[in-house]
Length: 182
Image (cartoon, rainbow, N blue to C red; front, side, top):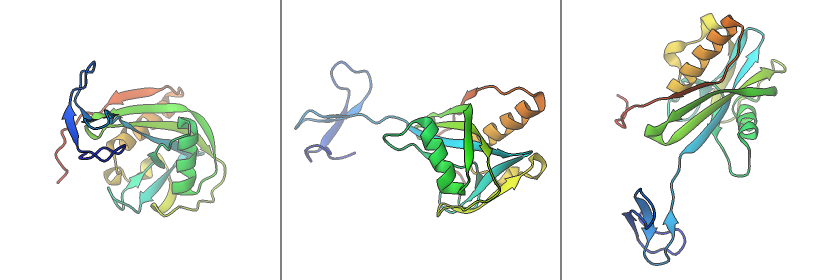
């Protein structure tokens, strides 16, 4: 950040009085610009023994498979955001279930949260962010083509819980350095 969104003056990256972290601070109007992690919300949509995945039509990870998910919008709950993203990315009609996984991803300033969901029919109408939406059995999941580690972890936990016959909330922090992938 170089300029204050409130008054247009240049900002300094400094620790404001009473704080303990550097923030972008405007000397002109006194605004402190807080930058906080973003929520990524999605579902694990289930149809019988299969899970619905979407093939990405956007970067990052164009062409790779993911659970339907995306950024939370202002004015919505986590539940509402996960439901909206499933409709937008997969065009799937679902019944929302309980929270299933929460993964902290500090290196990209994100928190990923997935809910269980029941797919209500096999009609899918992927939106512009998805090349296709398709059901996969566990044996057919293209594990080497999964877009993000949070999705891999969530899918593995899902199949482990299903085999155990017991659903639980999974949490984990994924730590990586900030170097770009090769």
